[in-house]
Amino acid sequence: MELLKAGIASGAFHNSSERYDPPKCYPHTRLAVIEAIMDWIKDGQKTSFLMWLYGPAGAGKSAIAQTIAEMCHGLGILAASFFWSRNAAGRNNETCLIASLAYQLIIMIPEMRIHVEKAIENDPVLLSRSLDAQMESLVIEPLEKTFLGSHEQTVDLGEPKLVILDGLDECGGPGVQEYILKVISTAILRFPLRIHILIASRPEQGIRDSFNAKPLLSITTRLPLDDKYLPDDDIGHFLIDSLTALKESHILRSLLPTTWPTTKDIDMLVQKSSGQFIYAATVVKFVKSPRRRPDEQLKIILGIGGTGKHTPFSELDALYLHIFSTVEYLPRVLEIMSCLYFLHSHFYPRVDNIENLLFYTQGDVHLILIDMHSILDVPDITSSKPLDVFHASLQDFLMDPNRSGTFFLDESIARARLAQCFLRHIPNFPTSTSNPCKYM
Image (cartoon, rainbow, N blue to C red):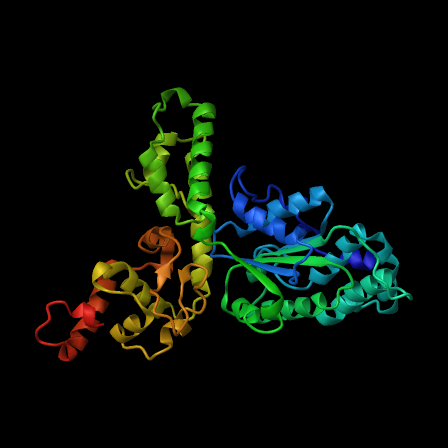
């Protein structure tokens, strides 16, 4: 057990002190999503024992996963959890995953302990072996010996048990993520009892490819965080409650207008959130500063006042900076963003239109944006849907050099580049048209 404990990442557990205070759903929000997950867990007739909860950066995946973990822990059906984080040692790779799951399973199922201890006694360096080998020796075989035994009859463990893996996109690189999914998919088909696994992540390329291939394709229930679950209503509720509570607690509460914040203010914030809770949470944190006037802070957010030395979106900026730091073709990514932001209603941003305008080869846009799926809605290569941005706040970030730094999108340079592209296309335009954009 000492060897096993030395190989775990206790900070990745849902109730670890390292993660305190973890993000979780604001009361009375995300109810439809939570209900869908809990119904899946309790459904005794289902054929899939793996659920993929996915959505863009900042959509609230970790908050939902944490809320589900706490609910299931309270019900006694949480078998194990692992919350990855790219900035935390032990939680930013795959090294401690299997040992951490085995340790938590032992707590849930004490009868497993003797079999796990025996596996490590027989192979003291087991924790340095491959994930496949660890999963086999520390999880699958102990479960089989516990619940099948010599009679080969499954012992009833009661209600289905849940394992939660959150933030898979923050674990190592695409190769590691795909490897983890391969190990998990193989294990699910061999578990001798009903263990459900909830995986939450961004829809990154490698992860998407794994879920779109067998065996995951046929054994996974998918739950995208999209408009079906009315995120704008939940965000509006969160903003109203949070700012109302601030009016009652701030040291300058008596100086705040009775109508603050206005309905228009809330509507503008909801619109700029684009369904992403991270924006709304960052707004509230900035406005709540005890050293500032809340109404003035909100004016900064809404673009009415100057920011001075204060950065209201430091958390959001850090997220964007990380995403753009992974981009291989940055100049071309910014070219594509220019088409989305500066051509307005005169240009339909379908992928083939963008490729034609910028003189790219067919398929280039998909290759260039391969690392941008957490903040861009990139349609399939055969789709006629437009390329779109998940976050309305992304434009604010890119066009403010103090926030975006080396990723700054200079509007004048971008417009000049687009103008050059249009000039190169002039020989191909029909002479009768006054709007060449529509021929792109």
